[in-house]
Image (tube, rainbow, N blue to C red; front, side, top):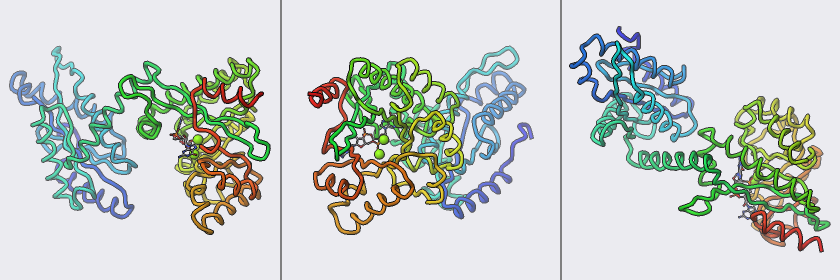
Length: 424
Ligand code: C2E
Ligand code: MG
Ligand code: MG
């Protein structure tokens, strides 16, 4: 009654419904048990009146932290639960736990007292840990008690293995945040060659994290976390600035690096000022739209294709070319492909690998080439390592090649040598 939240009976109901829905849609469900640390002490020393106000304040902070589709309940005393539905990553659950811990450890101002509490959280997952409500509750409760034993103000998953992963992830997340602050990212460039003329057509900029302790860290180690947390926006902005400045400089010095391809997370396009920033950098570094291309992965576009189409149209209106990266791995429907305002397909490495495998591998590559020809799209093959792969592609009409066969991604000084050696 006090907090206006669903009680135990209603909570059980919602959990049953949530499980059924997750079962139908093959999705994950997470159950959080949140228990306030030290609540009893506050209640005993300041009285029920203050205790009740704290519970109300906790309720509103929790409501602000979760989405409206999540279910918050109070089981009694200082024990709250959240049912989280509809999320892509198990790791997403640790983010919410972190947020709740942070929100509840901020001071509460009540009746002229500044009060500090914290919380301990236990999490169980459907279907990983259990398939029925009763066991999920038991496990989330158990995990919460483990969090208390671990010294309070922390979260634990029922499964130890996920807790370890989550903690690892927290470390990566903190690391990326620092790396953004101290600009620890460097940009490598990988040449894209027209194999029929041997000309350098352009380069793809790929990011590396130059960690002071661990050395160069490849993108697969941190891009997924950066994407999930939104920090990819800062990283992409930094890469855009560094690479555009470098290209501007090369052009000014008389080199011809061709078109700069930037990888872009679709999340970034959700920010309306992306295009403005791109434009500002073009002015600042004297680059024209024909000097820039953007690569978006097919799977990223296909997450919300209709929105992506709208955003991409704004970019192509600036005459900036757009390529679909990792093409063939993201389940585009052909009807969408026609609607995407894209200029180029980048055939994924996995198909290139299969060229030497068997006839069906080769047929598939030929089919992709025919597809892009009939849609009048440019194409490039990525991950080409062998001469035989290059020859097959050229013979079948795909002349643009990127891959170790020509060059690995290199830092700017090495790329400059690469360009020099080709100029003479
Ligand atoms: P991608 O855009 O498909 O980039 C191509 C990746 O394939 C690069 O890996 C490149 O080093 C690698 N590669 C190129 N040729 C070959 C080859 O012949 N053999 C093999 N085995 N590998 C080859 P990298 O640099 O590790 O990047 C991985 C992915 O990380 C990229 O895939 C891209 O999706 C993402 N990424 C990299 N930089 C950025 C960035 O600045 N922003 C965003 N949003 N994503 C980035
Ligand atoms: Mg790419
Ligand atoms: Mg790719």
